[in-house]
Length: 132
Picture 1: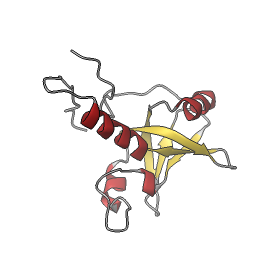
Picture 2 (picture 1 turned 30 degrees about the vertical axis):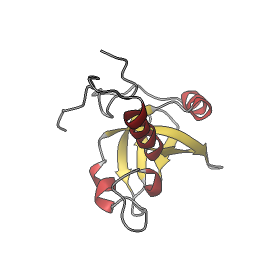
Picture 3 (picture 1 turned 135 degrees about the vertical axis):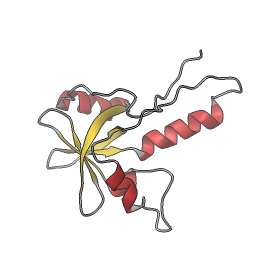
Picture 4 (picture 1 turned 180 degrees about the vertical axis):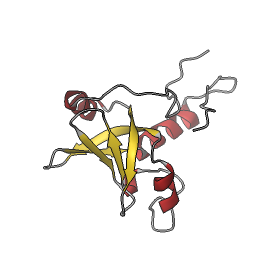
């Protein structure tokens, strides 16, 4: 089997705690990470649990690359459906309040680009067929 560049989010049942240092390095390197969503707030932003003292948020506009409404924002039900799920993200920034700003949209865009440009006929791609 060819190397699979992108694994489906939630591929693993558990995620390891993520430290502030790991998040800082991911911001620099553009690494893809996973963590569990703990909350969808009233503005439809996702809040993540790193299992450490670091805090992270995926703003509504960074939740999806597809499935957006006519204003360009993901539909509210997408945010709500992610609570208690493990999601993938890239670190985009850190606020002055030490909250890491994350993006699922960037991961989706990278994966779609890989599918369109690098994936060849006959390639075997594993998928996540688990139910939560």
